[in-house]
Structure formats: C-alpha cells, structure tokens
Length: 120
Image 1 (cartoon, rainbow, N blue to C red):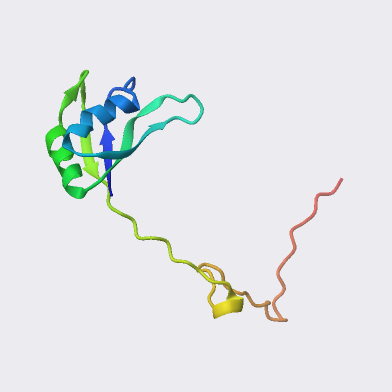
Image 2 (spheres, one colour; image 1 turned 180 degrees about the vertical axis):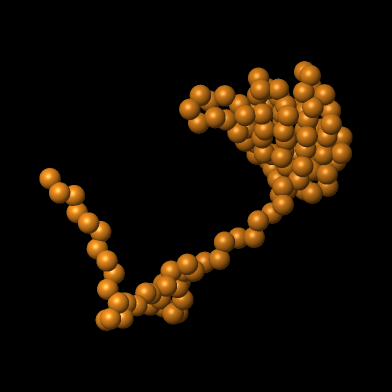
C-alpha cells in the first residue's frame, strides 16, 4: 500500500468527495482528513492509502496543481518509515533501551552544594 498526502483542498470538503476525486486513478483503501482536536475543523490536508504505487503516481500526476474552488491541490507520495526496532528486556538477552545509562556516584571529595531552603 502507498500513502498519499493531499493538501490545499477546500475546508468544507468531506472524505467521500476526496475519495470520488481520487478513485478514477486507483483503488482507495483508507482516508484520514486531519482535523483540529478542539474545534473539529478541517486543517486542509489529508492522507489516503492506495493499493499500489502506480495508482498513487497516476493520481499525483493527474491532480497535482488542479484548482478546486479557488484552491490549488498538492499531492505527494509519503515516504515509508522503517519499523521501530524492538527492544528486549535485560533479563532475556542483555539488551537495553537506547538513551538510558547507569550513572555512578560522585567522588567522595566532591560534594554537590544543596539548594537553599525558603525561610518562613
């Protein structure tokens, strides 16, 4: 499956209208219009998943730069992110999560100054 970014469409456009716009170029699996969490208003961009790379490229070639209600569409294929590595617990394989390391105590001669307390 190939993910396609669509931006610049009118804010009052619904999911079904976007699917009908893109579906002549290939099969659309999923669609997600990005909305504001508080107000629920459309932010003007969406993500579609299409069956194949060729379908996504056809849609991008045909619709990129198209005017709809005084707005210009922009379509881009989203690069796939590699899956996040799986970490095992240190009990099983001796692995650990990156970014965590064991710290040692300070030398006996160096004393860290304490923060002053508020006086009431």
